[in-house]
Amino acid sequence: MIYLVSDTHWGHKKVIEYCNRPFQSVEEMDEAMINNWNAVVNDDDEVYHLGDFAFYDGGKLRTLLSRLKGKIHLVAGNHDHYRKEKRLDILSERCVWVKDYYELEIDDDEMGVKQTIVMSHYPMISFNKQYHGSWMAHGHCHNTLPSPDDVARIDVGVDGWGFAPVS
Image (cartoon, rainbow, N blue to C red; front, top):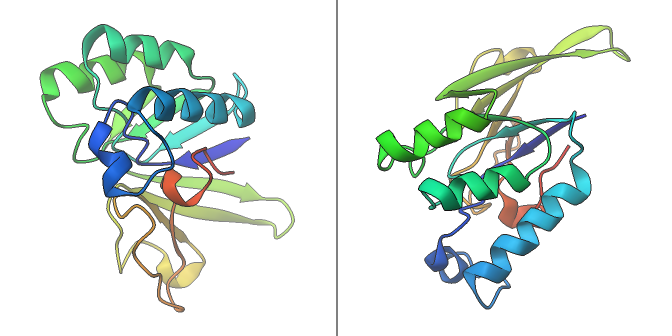
């Protein structure tokens, strides 16, 4: 199974207030999202995280990563680049890869075609194969950006998907 997720912001106390998340503490938020993640993701599943993974560094980040199921691919966000020498290096140890942009092609057996999902932390109003059936998956906006009717774009941030990855 393939899952998409963004903007978990593990360890970020202020995101609870900024995004009106229903948690009393960062510890409660972290535990709820770890449990939600592991309730839907299996060890062999592919998870594409579209940025702003965590505010932790060092041992706390390694511990968090060790608790998550799935094969994680990271499309880095603005907060993942913060203190790059620490955070991205640790994320790279656990993730299959870390990139700034990715195009995933999925075989659609029912339609007999390939489905392209363009992935970036930031939303794009114009993207590859846009008029040929591709989708733009992004984060960053915490589900506050309306998607125009004529653009196949989806915000996969946890704030709009029950604080869990979505398939």
